[in-house]
Length: 61
Image 1 (cartoon, rainbow, N blue to C red):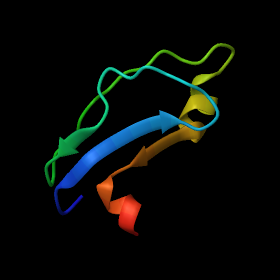
Image 2 (image 1 turned 90 degrees about the vertical axis):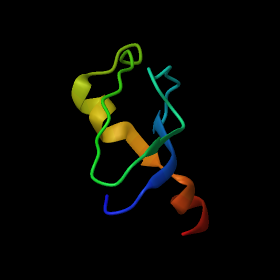
Image 3 (image 1 turned 45 degrees about the vertical axis):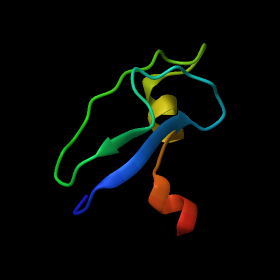
Image 4 (image 1 turned 120 degrees about the horizontal axis):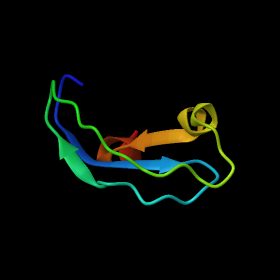
């Protein structure tokens, strides 16, 4: 992103998961690696398609 992303949240649509980090700030130009176990019976492809990333910006967009 070109600007600071505040309160970034990651989730899987349709499944609960515990991510290694959640609700974090992400400075412009930076990336962050997080991990989560695959939901039971899911493939990596399913998890990739269900991954949602939101931030405070999305609450007002």
